[in-house]
Image 1: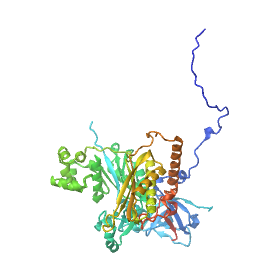
Image 2: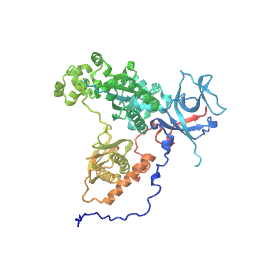
Image 3: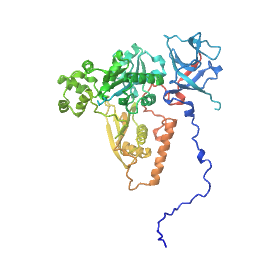
Image 4: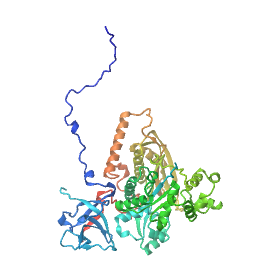
Length: 135
Length: 431
């Protein structure tokens, strides 16, 4: 008869769940994070608040929250924050006969031409306008 | 194989506080701007235009009021909330340029670029400048050398001499060229050489940086200290002060302020002490430490010589080292009640947390209740988290008071443009 080796087995004092493991365990993903979605370059992103109606026709309304990214180069068609005479203004960057201009999205306002020597600085590109619908 | 010389960079923001204000007020560009210290006491940051007017760092505000009016200087109270956020952004951006970074102060950091010498480091420095300028709108200068002391000096030149266009790399210069440059700079510009050391060096006929560089480290060690010896070696391109990538935890934490107006009552002093203790306790938990002693002090205005004077402080030991705000506040207030004397016009109060140690390594106390401890820890974590997300002071102890009569003056403070949603800048859509 072979020797039977005595082995000490630990006794677990806790209950063992005999049910099925959650079928969703393999599918868990992290919840949607709006910061991640709205902000691509967090060091270069700033928030501004719209005041006025000159961008109405592009859906940028009075009181909207703008997510502004300073790290991306400005392209034609972008909505930008421009510092005009030291004040932040939201406009669309466009070309008129090859010359850069700033346009409003409301026929009541005139275009502003960008004088290369003037006191006008493109401060950042607007990536999002967040519009609040429920108080 | 030749050993490559280290390349250490110092990136430093130009007129940092003023530049932060300008990012959100483009009107201030090219105008004289200055920022006042806490309580609007004295000048702590100046734009180039203000420097050119001869206004020195640290001058009391009341002494320059006529100059300010005459030259239309724009004056701000310090907005540390804004400066701290802008600083964090700058440091984050810079960290992409080298894995080895030491944040040296709110507006400067060292970078080890030794592994990047296959790149043209002057171009690399220009990229750092351009990126920071574009991302956050702040101007910086980059100084590069074989040691931290050289990097500091190179940064000074990058700032002062337009020919460098904001980046100066000593490692690209021939030894003779470097010596010539050093002979043109006075020794007081060297990192660690203060005005008193400068006087003593002058007695030894050491006037320029070159004089100091050529001095014998051994002799200076005898005359001064081992620090001076290191400085000389560092000027000679020998790196002696390593980069400290992780700031060592502070061994004591102080929180004190001068009041906006004199304070007489124990109630007002109590509010101030609770506020300062709460702030210090937050910092204590941030660096994961516990304190064993709380020192509380109150002072009258010693500059008002005709008024009765009273200064006192008291060290209060805690039953067990801890970082629970309630525990620290309790100790601080016990101390305050003991030292408070009615009838004096108090100018300043503060607290100091002493004998700090690592919270994890803390020995379990004899009378410690584990459950209470766990409760205290989670409560403090919850408060810190809420205040972190919703803004500091969202949850606070009512003893702090809601109206703070004693609070420091900050009459010209700009909004917290980047940290409070109701204070973000306006983008006008009216033209």
